Length: 414
Ligand code: C5P
Image 1: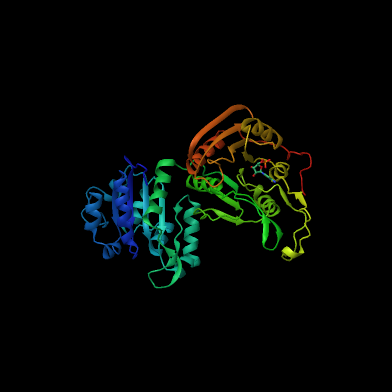
Image 2: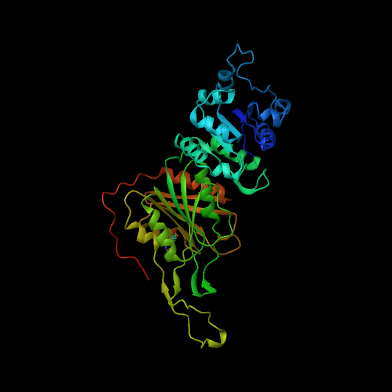
């Protein structure tokens, strides 16, 4: 919530939804962050919240009427040099107008004259949101590069439970900062990210796993979405909230993870393997619980799981491939060897063990290795910050052009 929006000009369009009160709280956040905000109300919005509230908080007169005494062509002056048009809450009615280009009120007219990005935050009843007409408008707008912040699922003003709630002002504020501060430099990227641990079952209630919490992979997914990428996240079991806009494919075992990643590999521009994939699995997963009385003292028989990176590099055509390595010692030596052995474009090495271990911590320090440049050390910072820098390094990688998929020596397939 500390981002600065000083110097940014935002046109805030508010429409006639009960959620209009949330636009007041959002306006306060935007102004506190330093933005210059011009509020445009639709006629029905002004029935929910008096224009005076927005005028006091924004420090500017609210504009709402297309025909009220405008020698100055209000719809043009409002949008002049605007950095962002943000319509929140957006009713089904205004959504339709924006999709079709109707200009029968000031907001619709403004939307047709702006040159800046448009973010729409719809809020409506669940059945309206699911209606094919509304979904058609959403698809059409997205196709034109408009950002639509999905409504949330929860209790709706109608008393029903469903998808249609306007996200809290903090969520919308963050989206605004993503667009205005960080930009959308990944909008042509399709990232396939693996995260979390795998679990290799021994019997229906026991498994072999590790201490990975998935935080790094989820942070990367969130950072990439914020910069405009499409993200598919293939995740082992974690306790984390899936970042908005990310397509999640939950998996349990290394084998499941390989299958899910293979299914998306050709779609992806980059594979980022943050998952702590188990290297071994019980040779036989029992179909019934192994009772302690049944155990005869025999050692657990293990076998190798598939090496996912190695298996996918054999199918690679254009994808950048980024691995993560968790090491306890000789980080750089082991890292360099892994970078070459797995045919990677980049390897992020972090330390495991000790009280600042990478697993589970919100912060980390890493070395970023690439084949042709010296290692780059990134000192301790939050995983979300690291994620941003790792994505910057990804963009610096030379493009991959392989005429044929690389044929590698056979990978372990267990
Ligand atoms: O060889 P090591 O397991 O240390 O390599 C780590 C990298 O390889 C990580 O990016 C991890 O996601 C990936 N990996 C894999 N398949 C495995 C084990 C690890 O792709 N079976």
